[in-house]
Picture (cartoon, rainbow, N blue to C red):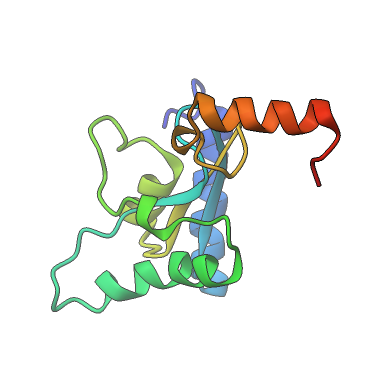
Length: 136
């Protein structure tokens, strides 16, 4: 990033690099709200060969989240860097600074349920229960 044009990003990158060098930074999290996918999941930079131990270590944090948080969906996690993502925080920290465990944690703005599994029948039944006063 350009120091004048992207002052905040430039400063953050310098701070993260300094912390990694002095204290051994082991994890970077970028927290986002997601408007198109439901649930809670992670994006990571985990394109390593099967022989490389980083292939497994980068998957450990999301696996632990899936065990501790019922709403976290390990199967929605993505390990590759998509087109146009080179400038994102997690990718810059992983590739430029060398923090393998660099993640974007996405939480749906719609909640943790997968709404695609609910059809009109489910909504009609829920509405009928609410109107009759028989819901939970």
